[in-house]
Image (tube, rainbow, N blue to C red):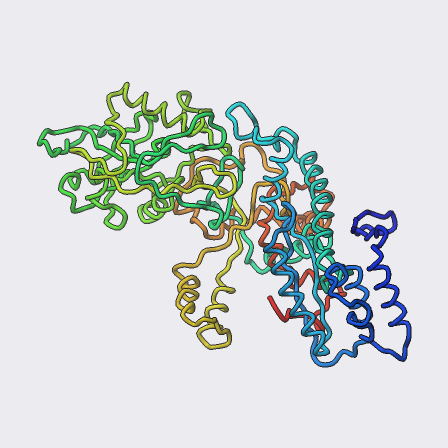
Amino acid sequence: MLRLCRTPHHPRLTLRLSPLEPILQISLQRFVTSVGNSHLGTGSWNLLETHRQYQPQVVEDPRLCALLWRDCLAKKTKVGKSFSMLLPPPNITGDLHLGHALTATIQDAICRWQHMKGRDVLWIPGMDHAGLATQMVVERHLFGHTCDRQDSMNPRLQMGREAFVQEVWKWKDSKGSSILAQLNRLGLLLDWSREYFTLSPDHNRAVSEALYRLFKDGLLYRSNSLIFWCCHLRSAISDIEVDHKILTEMTRLSVPGYAEPQPFGYVDVFDYQLAPPHQPFVSKSRKPRSTVPVATTRLETMLADTALAVHPSDTRYAHLIGQSVLHPFCNSRHIPIIADDEHVDPNQGTGVVKVSPGHSMVDWEIATRHGLRAINMLADDGTVNFVGGPQFQGLRRFSARQHLVKRLSELGLYRGRFAVGESAEFLAPVGAVSLPVCSRSGDVIEPLLREQWFVNTDPMADAALRAVQTGQLRISPSFHEPTWCDWLAPEKRRHWCISRQVWWGHRMPAYRVPEKSSDLQSTEYSVVDSGCGRPSAELTSKWVVARSPDEARALMAAKHNCAPEDLPALEQDCDVLDTWFSSGLLPLSALGWPMKAFDCSTFYPLSVT
């Protein structure tokens, strides 16, 4: 059996060999004797001569494989070009499975084939810190699923950042040992002298260097933008981590933080009162009304409404364009009624669309065209912030939804809750509802307006698009080329949100002078000024990105035209990077970039990616 242990002389794991089985002892002795005779040369040891029958425990034992290949590699003359490849770094979230073994086996066969052709082969192993995924696994490991219950707080927040990160490092040491043992059992042709971990100091230097250069070139910026937000994780997540559940009937789903399953797959219909002076609109029953009906799947976001949109040709509401309605819970807020023929369908819902730009991308686009405000009514944990006023502040979003039903009913403004497919005199049949759900936590995703770090991907997208169009890059099979071009088209591409509000990962090397409390982020923005997804010079100018705290201090002093010692202690951003940012640097960082030992001339670019 193989066991792994740590030695005080080497930080890596070292093989500790238990007493060899008799067959293996004989095989190893014969092999050592064989290769020790120089006149026999490499490969003189023949299994057929030492074993009358096939012995899988001999052929598959990594100790014997390692000796054979180490001797072979040492004596083989290297000819032709080098060959380099990375083992896709397994996440430290758990043990390896059959898929890992299959990938490693295929890569191992490729490496051995290239080596037999005489090429200088480099196959580099490593492990991925897998930021958000590992953080969630460790939370469950430490505290089970207590954080999913109503009366439980997220264990990460109970421990604090420093203590929790220490626990993750303990997890990494444990799972890293298991992963190394599994890889060693496969007897792979890996160069263990170059083993890496994506959260090591060397890789952190590579990440800081890359961000420094991107910031210096104006490709890394800060912006207020609508992003997918997981209230349970209290972090932005990527689009690919969002699953969309299509609900064709009213359905109850479990949501982290709630004791009971919550209902989804319906619309709530309520009325806004027209502000005086007003012209009452005529309903289908031909009775004049001084209210405007609105249908919504997210009633709680009405606290952040800044407009109602109607189709200009809808005879029910066209005469109301230019008027306004009163917000029932924010008396000082008059909500304008605007015309929009791009996103309003008179045959959907009530024909009136509530516009809350701080909580919907479609609403943001409407607000951009009409110069509306964007209001954020949710805190990071999914509770209503002070925008909700004393009646709703502090309530969790779905609890606030039910409380709004009660309060609107008391005011005589609530018309009812209608499931998918239902209709009424004032409501067209409701279509299927798409519910965004976090693939990691199971929480319902909220589009929220937040300050985040973005990478401008336009130059890279232009180059990638041009490479296919000119034939420099060939996509196989070729019928995928239209998809490639569609993704990278100027009107479709999006800048990359690289910041995450988790604790396990590469911390953003961004620094600023601490802000006063009066300068802290507001909950209300001008859509025109904020520019969703566009660089904000005002927000970006507050920060410097540097490779070290000392360099950050020097850069900030130059920005403020003062001596470094005249500055107060700088504040580092608490956000960490999307794991895929550091993973994207691996072809460079695994070879030593940005240090002087970077094997650019020999092994870069990689032969297989």
